[in-house]
Length: 187
Image (cartoon, rainbow, N blue to C red):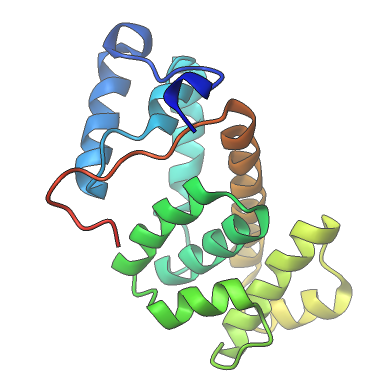
């Protein structure tokens, strides 16, 4: 997808303001990419951007779920949605949180693949049910609650919903993935 095919072009410092622009540059440096086009696109609506970022940050990285598990959940949502931007970005972040190549393969092949812990399997089953049916059946909920606290279960539902919403916005706005910066591995 070319930048011209994006429905709303990423803004520069004038369109997004110096704080969003600086934040996007720092985020890109940390990720080993150019400034994320997601931030420079959503940043055109500054007030909404900062509210969204605060909420998103409360889920990940500031949530109660361990970071590796949050990344597994996000990667599964991205895979089910077919959202390459989310998947690529969280593949990088997930590796930093302990997500392995084997985990990534299992995210794509699904829940029947050997190697998931009972806790991971219950979380990913909830992701699949939320994605496909917009709900979690009683059996899956009971299994999830055997592994997650009340607050973790609430957070999981919001994490899945947030990344479903974000995938929708990325797709509808046709936001292009950031390019890797020369000299950094895209892994």
